Structure formats: C-alpha cells, structure tokens
Image: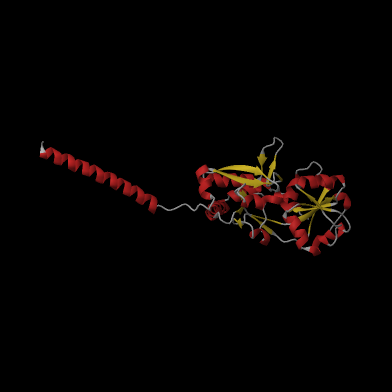
Length: 283
C-alpha cells in the first residue's frame, strides 16, 4: 500500500469535511445574526405579497365612488394608488360596511381605512392614524325650497346621517348645534346617496354630511340649484389613513410618501382635480 497516497487522501477528506463544516457554520451564523422581521407589523406580509387591501365606502363622493362605467375613482383612490405605487405595492380596494370599518381592520380583513376617514379621539383608541392630508367640516344640506338660513330652521324637522360616520358622532357630541332643533330620532343610513334620495323625496328635510361630499355631490347634479348647503359651528377636522396600531413600519412608509407629495405639489394637483370649486359652495 502506498502510504503517501493514503495520507494525501486523508488530508483531502479532512479538508472537504472542514469546508462543509465552515459552510454550515456560516449559514447558521447568517440566520442567527440577520435582523428578524417583526411579525406583528403588516408591512412585511404586504411587501412580500406586493399587495395591500384597503377598505372604503364606495359611494363616498368624491373620495371613493363608482363612476358611470362602474369603475372605482376618487381623490382617495388616486392618492392611495399613487402612494403605494411609490412603494411597489398594488392596492386591492374592498367595499365595506362603514359601521364595521375598525373591526374589519383589526381582525385583518383589511389592511387600512382610506376613505375620507376623519381623525377623532374615539377613533385613536382603535386605530393609528397617518399624517393628515385634508381638512373638512360637517355641513347641513337641505332643499332650496325650504328657504333655510341656519340650523335653527331645522326646528322640528327630520335629519339624516350616515351610520357611524363623523356626522353621526358629532351630531351627538355637539348637542347645542343641530341636535337641539331636529326631531328625534334621526334617520340613519348605510350610505349617503340613500339619504339624498330621501331628502329629494321629502322623507327627511336635511342631511348632516362632510363638506367635501356635499360640495362635490351637489355640484355634479343636474338640479344642483335645488339644494342648499348651510355651515354651522362644527369643528374643522383632519382626514387621514387608519392603520392597525401594530403596523408601525407600514404607517411610517405611507407617511413618508404623503409628506413627499405635500412638498412636491402632487397633493395640491390631486386636490384641484377632485375638489375644484367644491369648497366655494359652502355658505
């Protein structure tokens, strides 16, 4: 037997074993030392799937609604699509029952609420908000034939609001503004378009609704002169995106894009596209 060849084979085998051990150790070290994903933050799942599900009321003009062709359009639709395009994510829009929005968010059926969503102390207990990107207030919509000039002219008349909306909350919260005049109970609707149908039919005499919705909706009606918008003393509200409180990284990434849009003029451009003269309709 050639002793020299045996030794060479032994050294080669030992070398191979050492190399294999080194490779395994390096792999274990990489797995151990690399940053661990925060599994409670939805961003990691969204980034992996390249898709996010956003809940909205698809009748809320002009934030998110169906056009005559049935396509989903609106200010918030444009803004969200542009925001997540920057992040390499595609938006899946999910029409929801607005009254259950926070429940759907927190049980994981949707990943965000982006639809004229007003910031409030009560909602902050349930969700984490993005930076605000729009302001608004609650206004009274009536028919011109009633010749109303103030909230007091709703004395003894029936009011309509969207269930679980900011109008619904603030109507109860600010009792000395409109609540003290109208007939109780108020009519509550799943969507505002149904309230407008009842207003036109005379089943209710007023609607408390967000100024953005009221201005745009009435401006685009063929009989817009038949409607009147009356402002009162409801506070100015901030509009923002709602996230789960655990989704901190997701919120940070959206905030960064929204702040960039504010600085580079894209936000202003979208506002001009969708609101135009709408705010000037307030009286």
